[in-house]
Structure formats: structure tokens, C-alpha cells
Length: 474
Image (cartoon, rainbow, N blue to C red; front, side):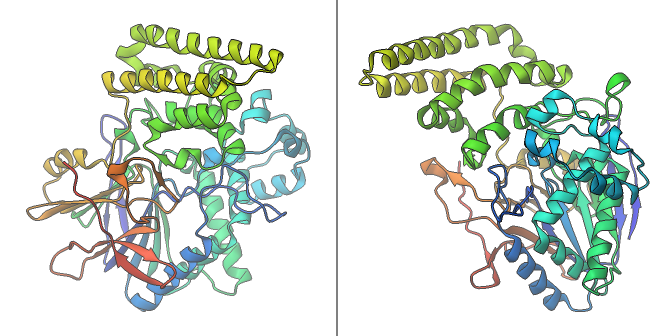
């Protein structure tokens, strides 16, 4: 497998890969966080619960391919570094000796005193920043909490003619760091030795996108989403050197969603995402007030100004007009609730909450519509430009949106590989069967690179792949 870099002027790299591998298994958006704690419990920021299913899926395809060459592609958001958080108490009682030894495996040498002094106060509240040595500690905790996932990867790589290709997504931008990549390989090799299954397959990392054998284009797709697009170079400079440049959506995850999901797990799995605020106001009103005041202020304090301007550019002059009624509504509701609490009369509370929810939801919805801030549905709208730029490409696949999709036109196809985490649909137009455990299977041995059945889902109960039923919407 040979990789070459082709840097574009917009800092997006399209790498080319030429390989004799016959089969490609492509998945995306596993969003693996800390998994099970030593207590056997999980935190609210964990979204991946398919550890054993993933292992069985790998074993099924190893049995299917036998000695044939095959590449497992994880197309972005494999490790959810953004959702790996530690409490203030945990930070105070870290195993600094262990952390120091872990870093030494990749030639990062820090004293225990340096590690203890490396946290800012906001990191103790909102989670670690993106330094390579902190990202390695996060990765170690993810591997500890998801043992079977990494056993599955070891099993894949220990078999003849099997390789692993990992693309960077907006939740695992930390793959930018060479030391993080190296630690991943070191850790898999350690697990392999423990299992007496030495790794013989190659592990490769792609920073942005890749074209395989001039026919298959793979990209996570977050750069087409305003909230997830990294504006500028991958890293920061000056006093912030050693940090990654994050998109606005990453700051929202760090300062808002993590706090929400600790108290209200899986809220970010709701679709459409525009319903999240309304649900939060209705079901967790005090938390919603905290989010819309204290946490938003923290977000504005730390957010990358370039990312903020990129997303809200033309809306900045209008945003004040929007925020005035929102803040006023919240203030009046909070004042009324305080009075109700003092008087002991709660009869109007439900009405106030529902009224406020309707007002804020309407305003936010109008704002999103006017300034085109809605997240993309499945990214298929980007396919024509890519096909035009790379005429030899026959198949484009992306992830990011968690919405599986396939579109065929003449002798070309676009696929969105969906996700492996649960999604809760709240709109009638999107009522559908379970589409988690999605994957795309591409074979270079066939006359055509794709068929209408190339996009599949893993039925773990039956332990077999099945076709997807996707709704065509006008």
C-alpha cells in the first residue's frame, strides 16, 4: 500500500493510495469515549455500546475473506477525544506515575511535577485541551474502557493480508499528532503480545481524504459543515503552540454538550438537532438556564475567534436582535419561577416553560434558516464537485452526519456510511428502522465497484449483514 500527499491551497490534503487489496470495509462515527469505568458504570458522554457486536462483525469478515487482502477503513470520529472528560476529583488523584511511563513509550519525557502543573483551571472543569501528551492519556483511558474493540482490531491485524486505515474526523483531530498515532500502534502491539497474536498488518493514518486506486474517494466530511470546519492551519501558534485549532462545534461540545450529557445522557443523539434546546428547556429547565448563561459565557471566552466569525460571519449584526428576546424570555421565566417558589404556587410553571420553549425554538429555527446554519443532511450535495475534479473516481464515501445514504448516477455512486451509535429520530419524516452498525463494503474484484447493496448494516442478533431500507425524500 503506497501513500502520496497532494496538498491543496485550502490546506485540505488529498492523499493517493495504490494497493492490491481486493476488499474495503468502511465504517465511520463510532464516537468511542471512556467506556466502562472500573466500577462497571459509564459516564453520560459515552455513546458507543457495540463493543461485542464490533468484535463479532470483525470475526465474520475475517472468516469471509480468509487469505484475501482486505483493508478496514475507519472514516473519522473513531475516538471521541472531545467526550473523554475527567472530574476535578479525578484530576487531583491521577496516576501520574502511570501517565509518565505511558508517555515515555513514545519518547515524551515529562516530570510528574510538569504533569501536575500542566492543567489550567478551566481544564479541571471543562476537560483537557488538545496537547499531544494529554491526548495520549485520553487514548489510554479509551482503550482501557473498550477492551473488546481493540482486541477486535488486534485480531484483524494479526491475520494475513489485513490492514487498517484511519481517517481524521472533527471529534478525533488529535490524530494530527504523530505521537498520538505512535501510541495507538504501540498499544495495539502490547495487546497483541498479551494475546499471543502478533500484528503483521500495516496501520496507516490519513489527515483529510484519500483516493484509492484512482476510483474510491474517502473523506469524513466535516469540512463541509460550518460548525465543524477547521478554519486555517491545523495547529495554533505563539502562546498556544502545541494546541490544535478547533472548529466552533468542538467548543460547543467541550463547554456545553459534555455538561448536558453528564446530567442528561444521549441528548446529542436526538435528530433533528434543532429539537435539542426545546427538549432541554422542557425536561431539564434549571440545567437549560445554566447552559444558556454560565456555560455560553465560558464558550464565548475560550472559543477560537476565527471559527466563530466563519460560522456567524453575516449574522453577527443580526445576532443581537435574536439574543434580546431569547435572554428576555429566559429572564422573565426565571423571575416568575423564583416568585412561584417563594409563594409556593406552581400552577403556572408548566405553561411558562412551554411558552418559553415555543418562543425560543421558533426564534432559533428562524435564525438557523435565515443564515444557513443547519448541519448538512448526508453531504451528497458535495459529490458533483468531487466527481468533476477527479473524473476517474467512481465512488465517494463520507460520514460525519450519522445519516446513511446512497445515491447513484450513471456509473458513479455516493455513500454516507452512517454511524455505530444510537440515533433518536423525532420527526415523522424520519421514522425508520434501526440503522446503527452501518458499513460500506467495496470490492475491487467485481466488474463494478459498487452495487445497490454495497451499503449494509450488521444485524448482531442474527450475526449477519443485512441490506438497508433508505427513504427517498423530495
